[in-house]
Amino acid sequence: MTETDPAPTRPIWLADDKKRVQIIDQRMLPHNLVIVDLTTVDQVIEAIGEMMVRGAPLIGVTGAFGVFIAVQNALESGDFEAQVRKECLRIKEARPTAVNLAWGVDRVCAAVFSKSNPGDCLAAALAEASAIAEEEVDNCRRIGEHGVSLIEAIRREKGGKTVNVLTHCNAGWLACVEHGTATAPIYKAFEKGIDIHVWVDETRPLNQGARLTAWELGQRGVAHTVITDNAGGHLMQHGMVDIVIVGTDRSTYTGDVANKIGTYLKALAARDNNIPFYVALPSSTFDWEMTDGLAQIPIEERNPDEVRCVEGLCPDGRVEKVRIVPEKSRAANYAFDVTPARLVTGFITERGVCGANRDQVLALFPEKR
Ligand code: MRU
Image (tube, rainbow, N blue to C red; front, side):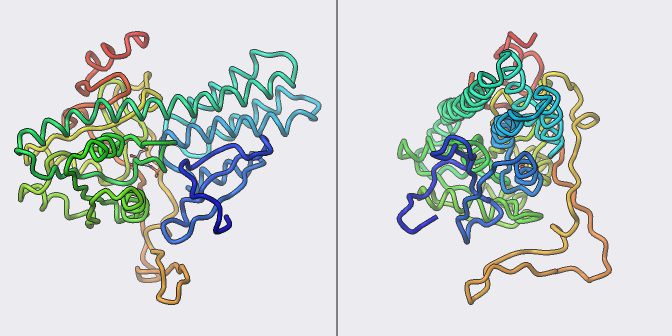
């Protein structure tokens, strides 16, 4: 990036040469805006695995563009189809929890092999990956339109006073392509002039609320306050939260929700305090096979060093990582948890708001019956 380049408004895009895929390296935010080129499948896998890109919809879009890269690099190979299929499998294994990854890869892979000539395969890969990105933008826009009605209802009940939303982790445009999922209704409400304030957490293990959601909201001018992960219950007990809206990495169509570790505790506190707990997601984040999220959704366990260490800005402007636990202590790093359907007030999808249960989800998506 040079000083004259405009700040990107998406976390992923195709470079001007129509070959390289470019991403924001989200590990560097909010202190540095670093753009990275992806030209090989290994780089795509590293970008997903190391969380340069993250968030279920974005992981799906990155996987989709990963197939485009795999096709480009296999054009000269002796066994084009076997090579591309092998690379698709490798991309799908980059991270386990977000269901969008396999969905995006499989969709582009199917488009590729609907053609017989490798040149057509490349065009098909690019067209399908781009279509997925644009569909996710549109889905998130619609999530905002449906979700804002929940915020408007609260504002009416409160006689126009500030609506306080709590969100966990980052389910903003950085996690998607534009708008975000959990943030889409928040941005829509802000655009409509509603007085809104957001409590922002996930302050461990990766500080994605503190680093990413706070950065996004700050860029748009949305009022927000960063809190520790443990503060949510206290705020709810004292009437300081009107609604919780979170994203999800995989939700069963029966209503169970996998999201960033700590989401379950927010849902429990919300239930104890009669606060609505909504989950915003595009249909690409539904798992249409699984019926028991707790038993079936794979929960990623990441490098314990993410728990043992924290990273931050030093007074001299350097970003440094420091260890905060005793050298010999073990650490465990579960990245997600599952909130059972009974604690979820509803889903906010691109087709509307519904209860977190099989009947209401399938009523919105009858083609999945
Ligand atoms: O580990 P991540 O950053 O890929 O997971 C993202 C989340 O868990 C977010 O909470 C988000 O809500 C889901 S993606 C919109």
